[in-house]
Image 1: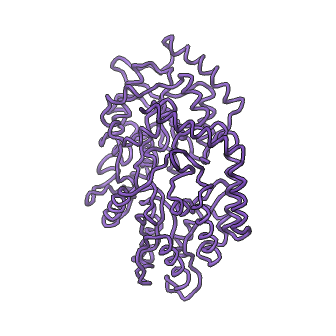
Image 2: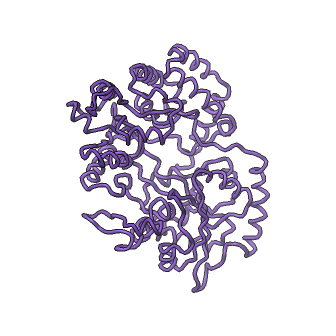
Image 3: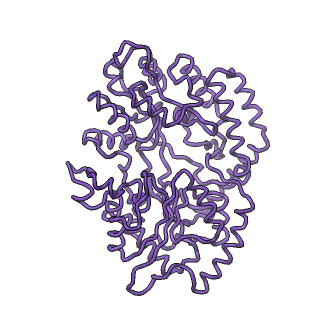
Length: 507
């Protein structure tokens, strides 16, 4: 089941009537904010999220520079990612939608309803006229298509390679004369050595192999290890032309047996059922854990912390295990334009986003002004203290204006060039064998209604098996029942119908 689902309620149902009213206003010449014609700046309202401690203000120096270069006046509503989904729901239901609105989940029931009602601009015929947007990977555009095979938003582009996968303490492996693992069995042996052979040399039995955790809704940092066994990216596997829920596959059983053994032998944290993401990272930064699951560049975060006291510390992202590594969808949400915006202004908005996808626009948004917000050192942009003061970062304006960069997940601020080049090589190697997720964007109304609870039920059983609170035979019985579960049967039927519709619409 997909993790992020929003259940329809009375508030969301009102989107139909509210939008129709707003559309009538837009079609009669009102709305849209003006500025689509003439020489004055284009007024643009934007709603998006930020990951910096504070969002950029209206007088932010980089915002002003973007406005100057694009002849716009930007009115940006910044929302914390902690409550962004709720803000999206309320805003869409109100009918008072900004010119550019980040839909962090492009496939909620609410978004699908608006698409069906014609509430959002179909951008499919226009995209070809914007060369920088056309540089986005084909998968980025394909995976953001709605059920009718059309694009109703500008993807917040992300690279398809370099996503969350396993990384390990390379310096510990070197110290223990271990090879970088290529199979899941070799990986197990490395974790076992991390726990039993005192890799940190402090003479204490205090190291953890893999700083993993699960949560109520999914396998969390154990997710990609499960995928290694199933050779499947996501919740659905294509078997003989039909999509089958991954939990019915024997690979999940094999993964649970492996994880239970690892847990019993203390290769995994004792409290993995309650551990949080931040706590798992703290184990890495404290030098207590030998591995984790995250994006390629994220491995630098604990490495940088550890190098303050241990210059040899090094977390190495793995290329693959058992020949498997995940391939990402190429996007993280999309910027939709409501149909209340006139066509002339819609094209101007596409111009603005095309500028943001250029080298100049993207670099300005993410890094700011050269020699003010960053210095060039060996081809790497190194942020200055002024960048922090002015809130210039990929985590802020870089969430709106961003170009496609194959190696986006290779670099992090402060990373030395040797780590950067190694990360690029890892990404190139992953590209040769990465596995895409086949069910991106597929719809099941039943899953929207009951998928969250069903997913929790499945995860609860997995967690019990991993912790040894239930034998693997109980999982076997559970899967037998799951195969006949009316909700899962209905979800499977609807997911396959959606899959066939997508295939038909792309032909």
